[in-house]
Image (cartoon, rainbow, N blue to C red; front, side):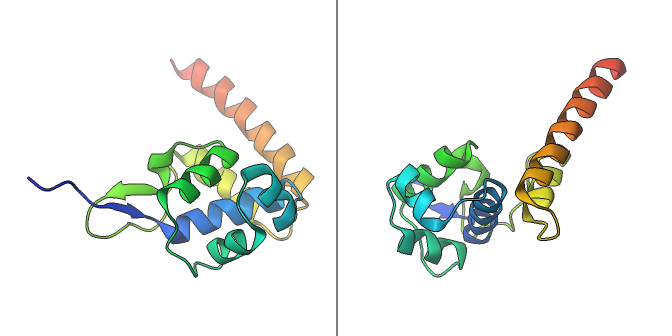
Length: 124
């Protein structure tokens, strides 16, 4: 049996990278310093112009703080990026919203997480 090919959801990775970078109000150069990747590589990742190596993907997801399997799967083609939970999808949307300042997006995410945790506990 041949090993399964790992496939990177490049669009999902780009969305997560761009959204997280903007929510933290960082330049590509800042992210490059924090990840050990070049600003040029990060720019190409955000514009979906490169097929990243597993090491590059790992550096980005580690910096974002998400599991590798959010953007890497085994199979013939990647699915469009989908967050693991509705809460994660909402977080992505807040971070990607250009009408929100990064601080406002993070504040909304904090409020949403608190409310979600409170309501989830009440349901159990």
